[in-house]
Length: 336
Image 1 (cartoon, helix red, strand yellow):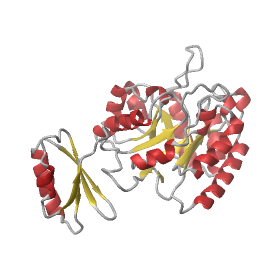
Image 2: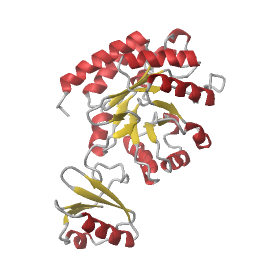
Image 3: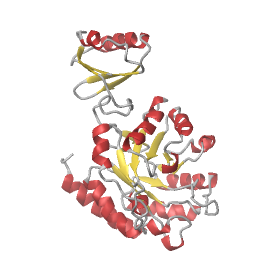
């Protein structure tokens, strides 16, 4: 349930209403937009008299929300959320570009790539320290050392870093990480999501390879229910019957999510296709569809990459993509 307050409602009146609602056993989420203040009621609202609330002088209207996700719901938070990350942000007027290697292989490798992607317009450095692999015999990442190498690259370039967590027990290693990524395989690792909800870290949540949009948003809700609203959603392709590409990029998820949630949405065309030459057209399509950013894998020597070389761009190819993306963004400016 949400209560939309009238313009001119004072802070004292809002506090008084929220205090009363909490005595009814409800959690309260306040969203102050450019035109209205919205109070979201979270909990068992079945016994709440909506007509009584609507009769209050400060209340414009009351609506019941049927969707199970509440905090992530645009009805609770009409304005787009802008997530601040270090010296940049995701959402709003800034188009985020996260770029870097699938896996951190050495300090020299990640430093070279970090400098190259920054020069081409990347706003964040992504790199895998802990790597979930289908085969237990594949390279599993440098783990703590990988994070240290990313932090050194951050010091050198100023780029905030994005890296994936595999286990809540590793949280202490992520204290200086700017954005903690939850990979597709862990999207429904609810115990991990609960732990991340207790932190104030920005969380980049990837859609599971076979999950619906509703399930995706419910995973975001798990994090937000713990008090952490710093969430970036990432569409990275879903599994279909098609085998030519690694996954099938669901571009329709971008406008759909934009209708349903206030959280920013980025796209990972590298994992979505698994083919380097398809990354550029899918990146352009994502920008045209209204995404808030991209996550692109870049490697200085893709042929010899220890992980996902087939989908990784060279620094020169990445520069070509970012230049083309800027043209698309200019062309669609003001459309969304």
